[in-house]
Length: 327
Image 1 (cartoon, rainbow, N blue to C red):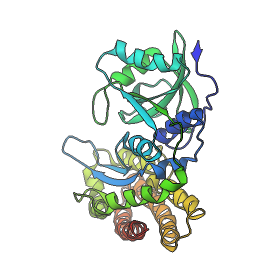
Image 2: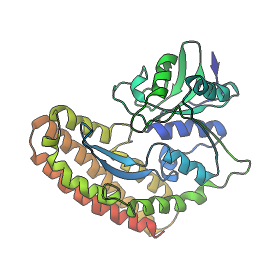
Image 3: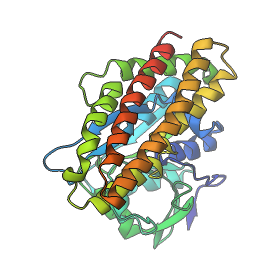
């Protein structure tokens, strides 16, 4: 068996921040999960629906791997990304750094991972890999999925080779700190402002605070949109609050990030935004609860209430991001 030494297999709430934490701790940089998420300007919003989709999807963060790219650029990290259509080359891209003593991040489809409890296709899942033997790969996934886990090499190969929405071509990546890394504390305000600018200037109505408002209009019709409301609505609610989001569609993570920052940056606008995202996180949990109740009961009034709360959330998050943009 080949394993990387001194890997702390700490599973966190979200998959990409979990993998980033493993790779960066091995490099000697230990940041909290909210700080990783915030420095990566990870918060966003997308209402996603199309004719080919069985049910709409609410995304609360930037696209898969954008968080990693943002964080690497912000902290001056060397991000080495390998992609290929060749399964043989893909395996070599993973074993080479592990054999050299460095853990590797992988983007793959979670459906094929042996330990994964919810069997749905999601091509934007990210794990850290730190070892392998003739049968299994040794991974670090979220706390919810078990933290330090293993999956068969065959299952890993299928997960990496899968094609579909959000998948990558056997993507693997490593991170390295520069000889003289910049102080990450100095990157807090730029990361916050970048996130706020993107959120407020979203180019289409499905994104940012406009996307949340659009959700407020669309969600009341979800009973008729769903093929199987008793299945589809509770599953959507579960993904919002428990599906690796850290709670409240990533708003709890961003709330905690802002709270951590407010202890280092003395600015009333930051404190205001922290208060607003504390309120928003609680309201997003209310929305997911109402959506689940609507699916379980078939009562559309729960969705009407959820729509009203979503319109409130659009205003609250817009106000918070306006405050943060002025830092």
